[in-house]
Length: 301
Image (cartoon, rainbow, N blue to C red; front, side, top):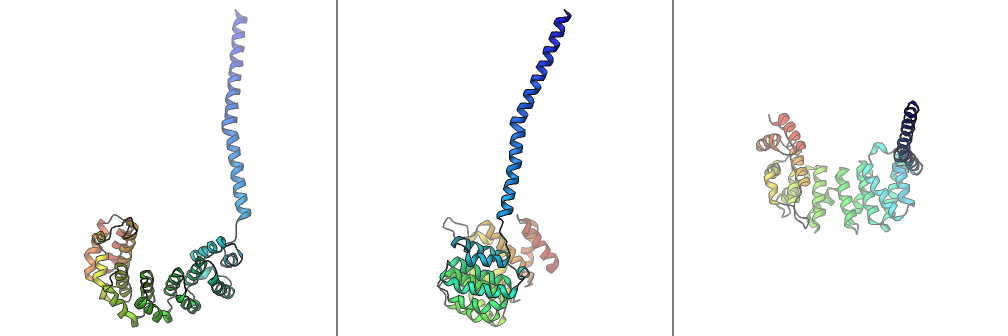
């Protein structure tokens, strides 16, 4: 009887050891090995990224534009136009010479390269690029012309005002007229207010709006009624977003309201007070509520 009991105990111990081995095998097969593979895979991936990572300084990007493939050139130009500010340019003389040269040579390249280079020059804030951008206003490609117009505004290049006015008066391209209006407002030369006042009655809503905003930035109240309308969400129901791309989506409406609230801190007008107060308490967007409340408390309380 004792022997039988001992045999049973030994059998139970063997079963427990067998079960333990099976558990360990399952753990090893289904967890430890995949985990180790994942770790080594991640290490390999990050090592690969480290070894293949390209430098991203402005000069390096210009070198990529100069010697890269067609796709690589416009991608480098795009990256340059988005990351650039004057503080990142260590050798300004070399950078200025190189980007001007590449811009001239890009006349025979993909227009995207030339357009992004124009935007990059604008983002530097360096007025030395003003004249070369003015020359690009006659470019055959509309994207390049738009980039040049926008960059002249970013540069605050006063010598371009006559050119911008000519575009507003004579261009048949609505996008160019709109961009020239915005740039004229950014430059803020009061000598050219009249053209902006005239555009308050333009058939294109965007041009009316940006003319009013440009005037407000010059502390001119000629477009104050338009600014007041832009402060009201109800107003934008006249311009619903449509499948053909016309109208305004929710993101665009919010941007318009934020811009109107911002300029209401430059052009102080009691007519804006009620709209700002309403936005600060009732608008669905936290960004709009916060900016409206800050503007109201600081300028209208």
